[in-house]
Length: 101
Image (cartoon, rainbow, N blue to C red; front, side, top):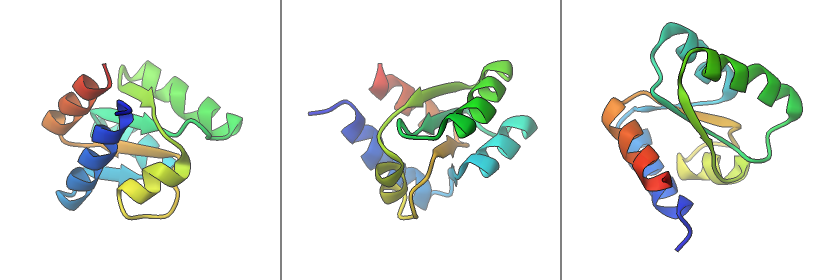
């Protein structure tokens, strides 16, 4: 089984719990506010989006991982394709990081 499959399944649970922010702008706003613990970034995001998001996450010491396509991330949380998903619950963020290691 691909290591990302359990994470994608866990994303559905996290979304139902209200612990997921969908979309680059919402994730960037939450990162600035210190409200996000982990970010999943689609592997197929544009260079422009990558250049805006990744330096901010790095500057704020927020862990991130490139996982799945925009379509897969959106589908996992029952939304349209998403370039980034921010996890706002520390416990869920820790579990996702563990699954991806």
